[in-house]
Image 1 (cartoon, helix red, strand yellow):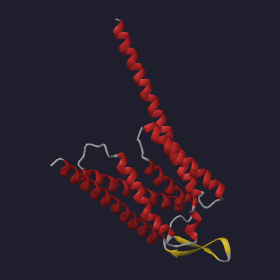
Image 2 (spheres, helix red, strand yellow; image 1 turned 90 degrees about the vertical axis):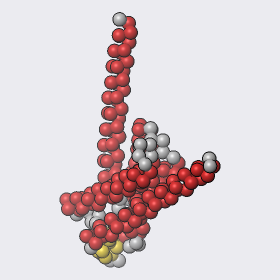
Image 3 (cartoon, one colour; image 1 turned 180 degrees about the vertical axis):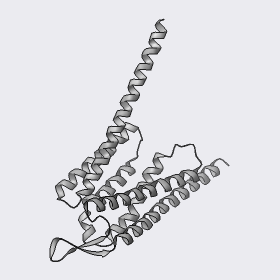
Image 4 (cartoon, helix red, strand yellow; image 1 turned 90 degrees about the horizontal axis):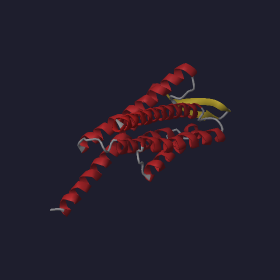
Length: 218
């Protein structure tokens, strides 16, 4: 009888822990989505707001690492911080240097793919399928990003699509130098290149390590 009550208590505690974990995960996910949307919408505002938003999403990244026990390495934190700095804090450069946006559409997917690949590393799959999975997940994230820009532009006309330069006659005026559809397709293509570069690198490193391992035990 005592053992029965102990088992029942263990099950109740396990259910309680599972519910707390699910609740924490949902709250964290909602906070991340809301924060990313807010800082992206207001990325052209003052330095103080952009820096505060960047610090918040970096803290949420660290919190998510702890909640989900992902075990991210220092390099992943560096990649994420650089991504936030380049995309949000340094966002005025989008309107000064036309190619700044294109550079980040190559570099950004490399950072993202590195994080995605690390997250799926423990899946029971062959290396080639892990690389393939990371490739399509990263490219899907890029697609969702572009769809979000289109949706926000359609609803609020924030001029997130297209390449603009500051007009010399007024700080708030913009000169469109790349049409919105062309800009989106170029961004997708550059993101594809960045993602493919990291996947090729991951495959090369894996084959090299496997070859060294076989040589050591041959």
